[in-house]
Amino acid sequence: MRFQPIATALAVGASAHVAQAAGLHDAAVAKGLLYFGTATDNPELTNTSYVTQLNNTNDFGQITPGNSQKWDTTEPTQGQFSFTKGDVIADLAEANGQKLRCHNLVWHQQLPNWVSSGSWTNETLTAVLKNHITNVVKHYKGRCYAWDVVNEALNDDGSYRDSIWYKTIGEAYIPIAFEAAAAADPDVKLYYNDYSIEWGGSKSTGAQNIVKLIQSYGAKIDGVGLQAHFTVGQTPVRKDLASNLKSFIDLGVEVAYTEVDVRMKTPATEANLQQQSTEYAYIPSSTGSSGSLVKAYYQCGGINYSGATQCEEGLTCKKWNPYYSQCVSA
Image 1: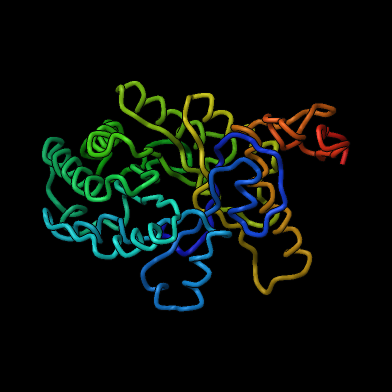
Image 2: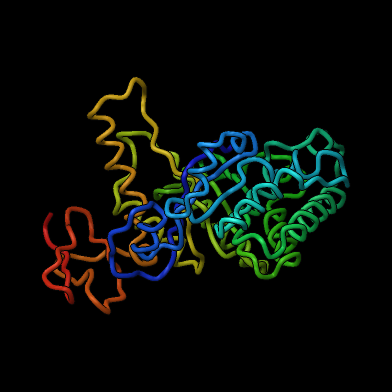
């Protein structure tokens, strides 16, 4: 989807003893997550107050360029690359010591006309795809924590979107893209990113099949990004989110919530704001330790404890002493 500045939280990392923290990123790390971050875009960087908050590393340990690394910006004319806008955000993240999550290499939207309206064969479009990925990934080599290599390749029913890529190359364009990205930067993490794959169903299954497809080609895929665009009153509960995360983790990849928002109709009411707060909490709390949740009466915290810290739905992690916390009825 087209980015606006929105929050993202990564759902990986070893569990840690829960600590009280002042900022969103600090709180995420204390829960054993890798970071809490945000997307930004170049026009926002003229707003001094906004930039001051963006630079607050207690809240944001990661930045994603919303639009400045997409195809229409980086290769507006065939073979002519421009990285000026993306470099501004990469430099900002580097100066702040924030992780840079790069987005994205292959999408059906925000393509320049020469790509979307070109007369291509499988061979010629594959060459264009590889050349674009190679140039962009090499330019940012060593600067990105991860790349969203392929973005939103699926329809809502889990079938492949009828994009220029799929129509011309077939499903093979996906592993081809991952192979090219890995060759350009062997150390960067490579993700497939999509929306409406946060709960079990045909689209989540389709995304899992993409992971398997890439793996079947022997190509590298490190993770799946779940965009997590929700609506108040319709957000999946924590246990369903966690169960779905596990389906991806069981394939040997990490997972990240990449574009989190829980929207509501306006004007907002106090009840909706409270419900929104509750549903936002479902999202990071669904991660537990690698997506797992602690059952009733099992340990969930304490000094030197390194297991999952999130209890199943309806339970709370009660601290009995500094060395032992247990999941009990809320």
